[in-house]
Length: 70
Image (tube, rainbow, N blue to C red; front, side, top):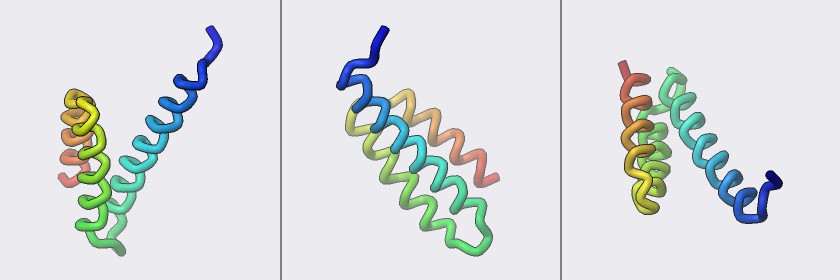
């Protein structure tokens, strides 16, 4: 099945969100950067998921990020 233009746009957005979560995790783990920077990026990304009703994904990402803090 070929990807439609909509599929490509959705894939691009999902990849951007995934990159934001990865960036937040990397900053959180970097001892040379403030954790607040990571938390801000993470919360902005969660806000996008929450706005579009992706509550299950929001909860999963919150749990994953919380594990990184430990």
